[in-house]
Amino acid sequence: MVEDDFEFDFDDVEEELDEDEGESWCFCTEPEEIRIQLERLGEKLQKDLETCCSTGITAKTISITWEKIDAALKYQKVDWTPEGLANSWSGRAVPERIAEIGWHYLPGEGYLPDDEDVAQRWLQIASWLGSLPAYLLLVKYRMLPVSAEDEGDPRAQAFFRWRESLQEDTEAGSTRKEQLESFPFLDALAIELGLRAALARSDKTLARQVVAVMDARKIQTEELMELRAKALILLSDQKPQEEIRILQEIKPANDSKEVQEVLKRYTPLLTPVPLRPWPRVLGWSTQLQREYPNMVEIIDDLERSAELAISMQCSVVRFRPLLLLGPAGVGKSRFARRLGAALGVPSQIIPLAGMSDSMLLKGNSRGWSNARTGAIVDFLLKTQVGNPLVCLDEIDKIGVGMNNGRVWEWLLTLLEAETASQVLDEFLMAPVNYSAINWIATANDVSELPDPLLSRFRIVRIPPLGGESFPAVFRGILGDIAREYQVAPEQLPSLPAEVVEKTRQAFARNPRSIRALAGLVRKLVELQAQAEAPQCRGANLLQ
Image (cartoon, rainbow, N blue to C red; front, side, top):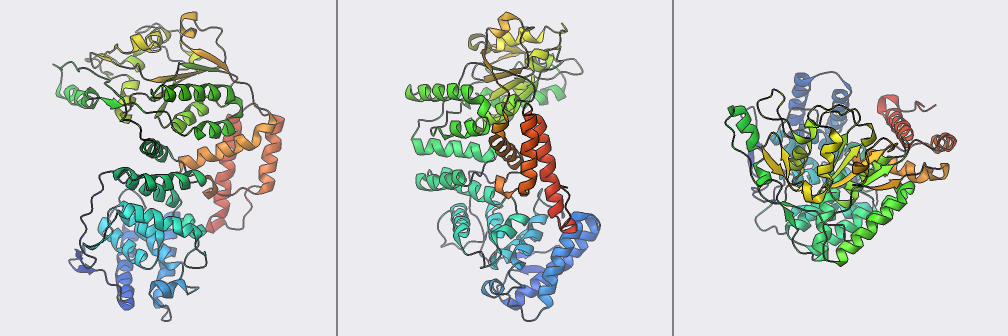
């Protein structure tokens, strides 16, 4: 993704780029030159398709895309200018097709061999011909040629151009629907570029505009929610984030070089890491209540905690350990993960069912073949955040084994802030500070759990859902699927109204399990996507 320290060190648009064959590349906007450049790129594309694989749906799709571009190249009446293609029924989709092939060449993105130079050439042509996705990708990958007199941040310009496109007449150029079919990440990318531009320059006006569009269009991914949280801090004039030191020391190793190399990975935790603040705008709670109507009690409680913390100028996300008690399938684990995203803190689900050895949590001593640090330390290292949300899933199903100490006894230390600040990790041979972690546990039945463990939690009983909850739960499930693919919910394949109604009726008959409903909705969305695919178009797979 685009980094915050965005630098512009591009040469002029006429810079020559060496091709693999030893020839030179010079981007020229003359219509006849555009045709020649595309013909050369097409020859390389066909070779690359033969090299990587000549079969498969993706290869066929790319081949078909090129055939349509090639047909336009051979049609002499096509005017290879932005205006000419936009006004041509046969040519208006061409820029997006060119951009789609360029995207496939980007490192780690598409189907074709990674080649930034070739990707840049396709995308430059597509962008000049009017492709918005191509322009955004050029900005994201720092491929956009700019002249010395250009001013401003291209990321902000990309966001504004995308926002304007939402209001433009879809008859001019490719329609928005066509863009989203080829580039489902388009909206999330535009929002990301806007947020990063605002944060890099502390531009409150831009931050306010981007957040407003993001919220209005419900564009949510885990990474965007984290950037949004930072933007809200910028808008609220909050003090710099509080920090916490996870490790005070790491005992030097007299072990193998391999162990020493592993220990070096954890040195970032010797320096303070930030503590995330509560969202300053309390809309997060309203949205969660819509998605999880059976969790209103705990959401209200968390909202009160946030209001109190903010009023006392103690803005860090921190709440007492919670235990969500309720029957299977009511959405406890799903809520925990969604809560983390809403609060702007990383979240981790640790399944405890059957766990009888606490070494997975507290680490295993050096010298053993399975020596390693505790799982939560690894999570803290990965996220570089001191107060994430950790969900102890199915805590009532902990195993009864005594190997290396009972799991629940070790949890007692973690769940008290005073003792959690000095918890020995067996591998690091040093105390770890877990005191800022926010804990949520889930359980179906707590009758067998020891009282000392239960006393660490505030227990909240989660009631089963009723049939009237279907609209909210259905929207929440679609939101989960959309976040997984980093798109807005409306960009998912649209299920027919009769299918949604039959799903609602089935849920009304047995509304107890969100898990079962989530599995069904995902399958329906997948079938609808398959039905809308070119090779299946017209088939009714949802019958």
